[in-house]
Each structure stands twice: as structure tokens, then as C-alpha cells.
Amino acid sequence: MTVRTQATTIIFCGIDLLLYGSGYLYLPDREMLVVSDLHLEKGAAQSSGLPLPAYDTDDTMRRLESACELLSPKTCLFLGDSFHNEAAAFRLPERIKNRLSALANQRQFIWVTGNHDPNIPAFLPGESCATYNIDGLVFCHEMPQQDKIAANNAPDDTTSAYGYIFGHFHPKARMRLPAKHVTGRCFIHDNRALIMPAFGAFTGGLNILDTAIQSLLGKPQTVHFCYQDQIYSYPVSQKHFMTG
Image (cartoon, rainbow, N blue to C red; front, side):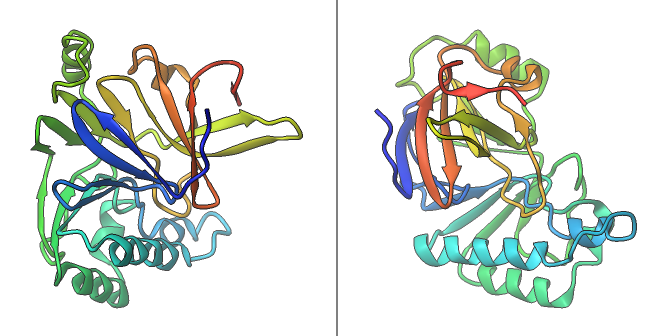
């Protein structure tokens, strides 16, 4: 049965997670907020070649501030591609630096590096790392091939913590509804791997039925579809989802 709600609770590898329709994840036992693929300053980085407005960073920051206000996390964990490129990270506007610093005054920031931002500027608050491990979960930007093999070979026991949470693919779903088709960002997971939606305003997405995503996941799979800040949970099947 599908339930419309602002957040849904799942047990992933033995750990309680809250998934929010706004596109972020929360570990209540650790008071940790997790977001992925902010791509801050994408509009500014591409404005010379594309007619993109430059409000995306402010919009993304506003939603990050709203998440922190709602949850008051002790830790914010960013799963890579927080900045659209290294140059954008190092020329971050002063107003954005100040807003990040204000958030970090009340909590720990941990920046996982991504393919767009392999080096995190030292002036940013917090610490950076390639992966972050806690409670048997591996948080990373993109699951390496050897980890994919390890996940697929792990015992099929969802009460044992041994899983991977990552971003990079910006998963989106195209849903069949009685009157229309709707496309939006989503979480998707099997028993061992969970892919986060992109949090940034200009991030686009890759269909969950694409081979690049399906090759990472076993069966069965569940999608948590984000639409107008609500979340809807479905098993992955041709009945509910379409390519394109």
C-alpha cells in the first residue's frame, strides 16, 4: 500500500532511517542529516554557455537550512558533488560561506569528496574524507566496483548492518498514474545498497530503470518517490514505472 507522508521510516541493514520527501535522509540514533549532490554554484558555472539563472545555490541552501531547522541534527554528512566543480568550490560567494558557517556553528560538518569536488577547500567548516563509515554502513559518493561485489555477496540478512549509501546517479522515476505520468527524484534501494536523490536545484536525474543503476542493485528493489515534499513508496516494477 502507498502512503503519502512527509517522511517514511525504513530499516536498512538493521539501521533505522528516515527518508524525507524533500530529498534528504536522517539517522535518528546518530542525529545525523545526510544529503547528496548539492552541486552548489552549477548555475554560475554554466551561465557562460547556458541561460541558467544563478539562484540555484541560494535555493539549495534554503532547503538545507530548513532541514537543519526541522531536525536540529548534530552532524551534517554531504555525500560528494557538493560543489559543481573545484573552481566553484574555491570561489564560493561570501554570503554562502557565511550561511554554511552559521549552520556549522551548531553541528559537525563532514564532506565526502565526489568526482566533481575531489578537493574540499580548507576554508569550509568541518572535515573531508573519501568515505565515512558508521554503524556498519559505508557512506560514499559512488560505490566502487569491489564494494559492489562485496555487497552482492553479503549474507541476505537485513538485520545485520552491512550496507552502502551513496549518491552520484541522481536517481529519478517516471511513474504511471491513472490520469498522467509524473517524473521526480527518488531514493532507490535493495537490501544492501541505497542510492540517494540529488539535493541540488539544477541536478537533473537518471531513470531508475537505466542499466547504470540497475547493475548496482539486486532484487527486490523499493523506490521512495519524492513529489512536492511528500514521499511515496513503491516496489520497483513495470506496473508502476516507465523508462525515459
